[in-house]
View 1: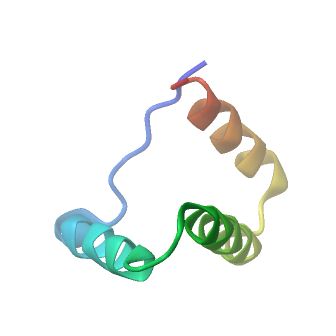
View 2 (view 1 turned 180 degrees about the vertical axis):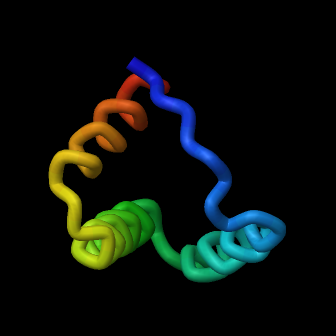
Amino acid sequence: MRETYEMGLGARGDEAYEALMAAHEGLSEAQSHALNVRILLLLANRFGDVDELKKIFETARAYD
């Protein structure tokens, strides 16, 4: 099931994307994957709602 999420970043969405891409610059594929996991865990901890995180994980997986 794919849920629809509002763009919570508003006009700064492109800025956030550019910052994410810059964080990955110069990393190997393995390092990039590891960085993504660390980012996910940090954001999940900040978010703090396990049930909502499960929905987000399900939605993200639905794009495969």
